Length: 173
Image 1 (tube, helix red, strand yellow):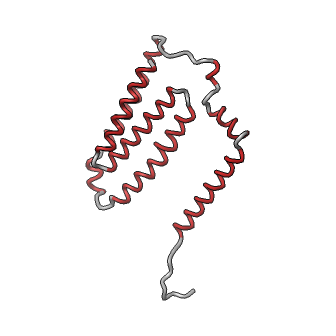
Image 2 (spheres, helix red, strand yellow):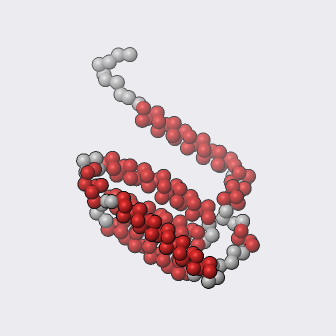
Image 3 (cartoon, rainbow, N blue to C red):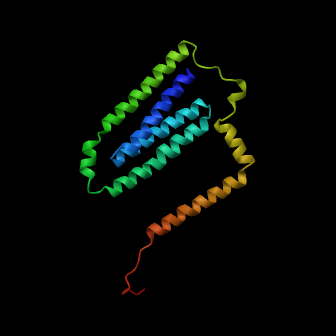
């Protein structure tokens, strides 16, 4: 069962990557990239790396793709009307809903036919959020805190640059 699921995810990942490259529309390319990132998350789940799969969805398919789409929409300001005429949200929603329902049906059939693999007692703790949190907050606490400080400084710097206003040369304070 895992082999078949891997083949389906691999074919979907390759198809979405080709669709992303060959598409002439930037929005379609960005949405194909989202599909590619979600299939990669599925491969992480097959490898029993739940934390990586969750982070893949939240960070890459969620936050970064929102930024990509924001920039794309910002650059295509004059083409905004034709953009929404070509892309219908109901088609994307129907595809995602159909994919979720198909995955639930396949999982139910696999569970009823005892095709789902048994989880090893050794693997119950590996790759979980709890295991990664234990290591992150004990062995790598200093690196974690330094990363948090650097990211906070970057956000403050970006806000300061965004609020910076250039005064005219003729103005005096």
